[in-house]
Image 1 (cartoon, rainbow, N blue to C red):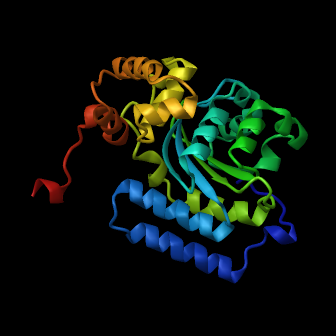
Image 2 (cartoon, rainbow, N blue to C red; image 1 turned 45 degrees about the vertical axis):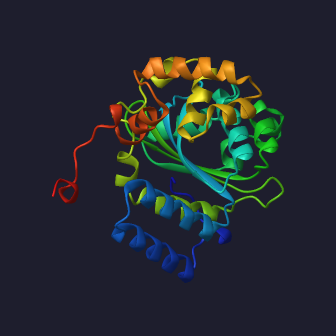
Length: 273
């Protein structure tokens, strides 16, 4: 978060600082695998700032004024229906302009930025947008977005949400999230597919939506229900996704995005022993 003059509700208390240090320490010494470390961090932040649910996504294409393309690789606090509606919001064409200010700021400074909903887009305009409509359907109201550029194209994207009728996040709460998320750069630089989703934007919007649901572990039947499509149509989309990435099964697709192309990775010292 760029330096700003602090209003009273921006200031962190001694208990805030202790909670931040304690959570950072827990994450740093954790012996869990990489995805579990990320979950531990965001679950902890959510508790500290009163977030209802969260996502950690890879922005495969995130440029100001262009339609962003996201891969949802971890989330918490959602049921299947709410998460499916969130994906519809992320894929809506209005994301191109509702996220333009935030992405422009991140690219201009080439730095990690964390912003509340009211800082990202005008409230009345946002509510009238297609993105706002899908988020309302998902019972999502206030949110915080925290973005860190990985390279000239890819972006590590964390979003923290509250229910539709909840109070907005304060600047103090956004500062807590920003401190915790920006001080662990290694969490943003690892854990992505080896090509950082470079070919994902070449998929059609519908296939990208199916891909995100497949990465969430959904079955063909579950995807059909979520998108109000026939299982036959979903099967066709699924095969097209497999062809695009050169895989033959759902399990191999998941390994490709969780551990690199085809799921291949070098073993750790402990695994090799």
